[in-house]
Every structure is written in C-alpha cells, then in structure tokens.
Image 1 (spheres, one colour):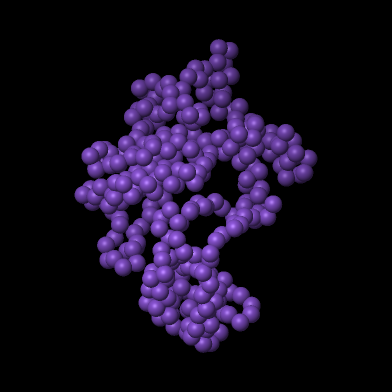
Image 2 (cartoon, rainbow, N blue to C red):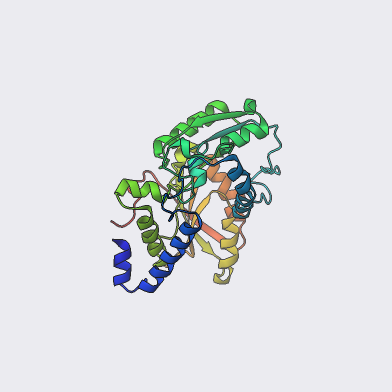
Length: 305
C-alpha cells in the first residue's frame, strides 16, 4: 500500500520499480530460484557455503564497525582512561542486546527471523560471549534483560545490580528496536516502517533517538536551573565551550531577558552543587554572576501531542 502511495505522489516512478524488479529477478535467476524445481531456501548452509562466505562476511563486518576512541579521561577528576580494558577489571554486562545475535544481525540481515535462535549463524558470539571469551567468565557478571524498549524498570534493575556487584566497569548494550519488530507491533511490513521513518527524518521531524534516563536512580537527585550573566556578549562562544566541558551541565540555552545564558545542572546533593558552582562554573572566563533555581518536582516532561 505504501509503495502505491509513493507512486501516486510522484516520489517513485514506475520505471524505477521496473528496474528494481529486474535486478531482483536477475539475482533469483542466478541463484536458481526461477528453475522449475526451485532452489533450497533452508537457512542451514553447507560447510562449503560457510567457508566460501566467511571471507566476504568478515570483510563486510570489519568495514561496518565504528571504532570509538577514548581520548582522555571519562571521569572529571581522574587521569585514568577507561579504554582499552586490560582484562584485570571486573566487568558488569547488561542490556537488551548484550546476549542476542538477532540484535547484532539487525532487521535486514539474511539470518534475521524474529527471536527464533535457530536462524542464528552458528559459531558467532554475542557481546556477552565475546567478553567472556576475551576476559574469562570469572570476571564477568551478567544481568539479563529481554525488553528491547529498555523500560524504566529495566534501568532500575541495572542500577540495583551495579550497586550490588560494584564492578570496575559496566558495559551496557543497547540499540534501537529493529524496524521489523516495530512492524510486527503495528501490523505492517518492515519496509513500510523503514520508508516512513526515512521520510520523517528527511522532513526533519525525527532527528534521532536517545535514552530517557532517570538520573535519580544513578544518585543525581537534584536538578538545578541557572541564569548566567556574562561580562561581555562577545565572550558567549568561549563561555559555552567551557560549559560544555562540565559533565554535570546537561542543557545550555541562549535566551532573551536579563540573563545571557540559561543552563540545567544535575547534581547529587547540595554540597555537590556548591562544588560545581565554585570550582567549575564560576571559573569560566566572562561569567560575572549566576542565579540558581532548584527544581522541587518535575511534574511534566513530554513533547507535543
């Protein structure tokens, strides 16, 4: 139905569809799918097929990997870099994709078939299994989560487990719910969800996805809003750059009115807030005065509906 709508809207031409159909039929012909007896579509590959596909598969996987660099310290008051892990740490692992090959395969891979583990590639490791193989099971503690939505209750479970185990490192494996899973929930095809999401992104309505974290479960019990006065307006860019380097500052706004900058800070308690104010914010060049507003309760946090 969606393809028909796109053709009627003039976004896709019939000649483009013809070209795609010819390509698909050409591949099917090469695979023998158009033969009288058809071809074996079983997900089970022969050993010969696995060996032949291993090289290209490994190359494709390596070229798709995004390598994250640990440039400097992740902690505000520490000179110790988190990455790479040296194998001496105790590691806590959790998240809905930590032990799922289906999640790693993604919704558009040849082996993805919902949650059926029979379609997983044998011999491939999940993130959890890879960490256990690399560092040893004795150093890994795992909290299983199955809910791809990563709900508020899941976050509370993870926080409780981390507090109990007190690991050196916590690895949280997350990911977007595959379009194919979304499609099943709304009774449409995965392609329909994919195309509509792309349209929303192209229109600028959907700009991405993010975690909605309850920071109080991590010990950050105070939200504070702060109006900042600058000595000179031309110092704005430098001040913003400095504020971005303060981990506890989570929002920065340029506003009209009496303040030059308005920010939101997350802190654990009032002594922590005083420390942030005195040792970090008031040391930013150009800031002459601040006014703080503590949030007593967050009654609403929502988008337009």
